[in-house]
Image (cartoon, rainbow, N blue to C red; front, side, top):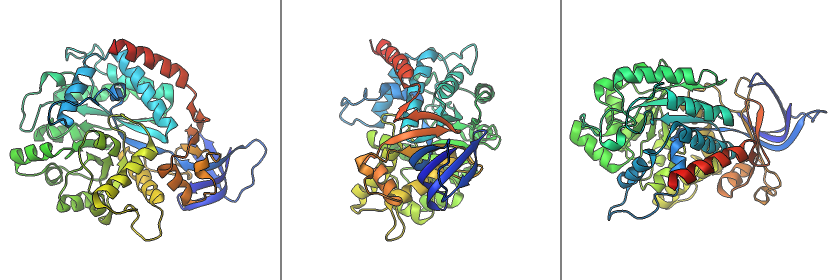
Length: 448
């Protein structure tokens, strides 16, 4: 049993919270309870968050694309750096890099990840003998670290709208519909040994998937999550209009049955009409503000989306920096910088900004990754985070001020439990040393 002086429950903050986990899920929650002999005692508990969008292998190139390129250095020039980096990666390399990324996610408040997995083939572009070799390595990394995994195999067939042939840097991603079906089944086998893993599909983007292919790919989700990049850059929007006469989000809402199982990643560049329609669809906007800032993508239209009661989750995307509170803080700060206001995320006067951010990201992230229940409540996964009450950032704080200080001041995480198993103690994952050593050897060899 775990006992917390205070914990954030679905109904709000409660005191004296005892949590019993059984078979990986929360079996019972008591409030106003006294600690009992044998209880493990901690000060503050919050639910773990879902990371809705990760390309784990890109953690290995974090910091390597910060040298100015051509006169107009943007996402598209960054992408060329990324293509050169991934050309070197073996399955062992991908597993080592993913393991470090997942350790860092767990240490920094994420307990589940949606792995938007598109690095399928060998360096020549040929499938491995086991077409699911790379998916298996992602699953091994999740198993080693204990993070919850929603595997999202990516379909990628074209270089741009209208079926433009792919370029050489994309050769490791490519599939046709038939081979992608085999990739999906291989992914299903790869996650079978993980206790609560699930599988969706990810048509990469309208740039990379033709309309007839999109319908076939979506059917392979079999009710699971469907994730797609949409409207991340202005060039993407312009190219989509030139191809179809419609903007990317507009096209998807007109031609696909976008609903609760969908996550539109980024959705940065939308008109007010697109914003309102996306909110009304019940889909989740997968926001990755740290990566979006790093790549110079733009700023999500949060004020209009929130006014329309749109759902959102947060993701780490390129994994240039991994931190749940940093993603939440960056969401709000981007709005402050562009709107020149403060505390935009709450929709009512007197409400905590940290709580508003957290209350949106928790259920939105769970929905995007196909999880029915989120939070510290009966039936949910026993995925909890305790904050370090000895951190000066939390001195004198209570209730929502705790979340504000975690997100905006940087209060430290103490422990993290996944399915009731303590993976992080005193801020360090139990496998950190071994995972870091393997990662260091891998990166030093890759960059030699």
